[in-house]
Image (cartoon, rainbow, N blue to C red; front, side, top):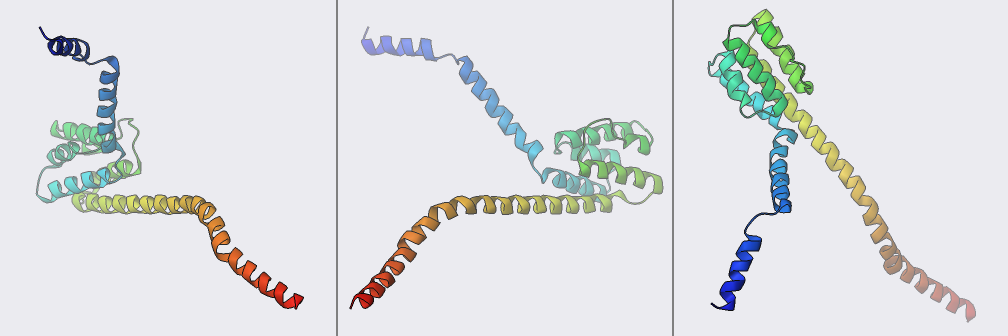
Length: 189
């Protein structure tokens, strides 16, 4: 048997099984892959768009809520799924669209208020949900603009610290030295 075969067998025995570090790294990667869905600022707006499109197409509210829940962030998906299940079982719409003690953001609370108001007054829910989607998108754009302006301010400090001394050394000092030399030469003559 050759040494290459022995070394290959040893490498397969030692490195063939994943270590705890490899398993932990794979779990961290999976956790990071699932995090952006909940952290995405536009996920709520897209969920509202799906919900409004389903309602505009003529779907029942329970069916539309169940369809929109599949692509919704976790907290909003829980509310939509709960409401869809309760409406499908024939519950009162005002009771179906109550907050089940889950922590919701302002858009989720606005959806619950809109759905309860729509159930009480009989007004169309689709246009209100579409308006909520537009409002959510504009809030996400304003937040992104605010973060971009903050980043530009934070970037300007280090750039000023780096470029200001270079500007002084390469731009101002030679001019001042040249003028000082001219002044001193004219004063000595």
